[in-house]
Image (cartoon, rainbow, N blue to C red; front, top):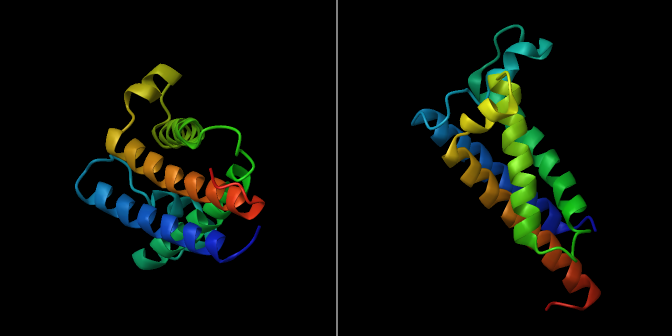
Length: 143
């Protein structure tokens, strides 16, 4: 299960996500800062360099995507588009809700950034398709 495909898929997904978040933040497609979480961590209390915050974000995404890859590889019976969309919806709503702290779920859904959702859906679809294909390929069934 743990092989080069897992590593490179997670690495490229984390890199794409990190660069996309920087792009979305730079052009104001998202109202929150992707590295805004760093001010609550005590390791950044001394005012760490911005690059180190982005590096930590990349590492957290990389590890999260590795776990997601392993978990999604067991969903071979479910079409990957459904799996990816459900995971994307849950991930985006939870991120937007935790950052924006709206009063209700309805307000959280109304404030979702569509470009952010699309980016998350693309990355999770990439991970899901690769994980399921590799699982089927190792079992000998590539249909």
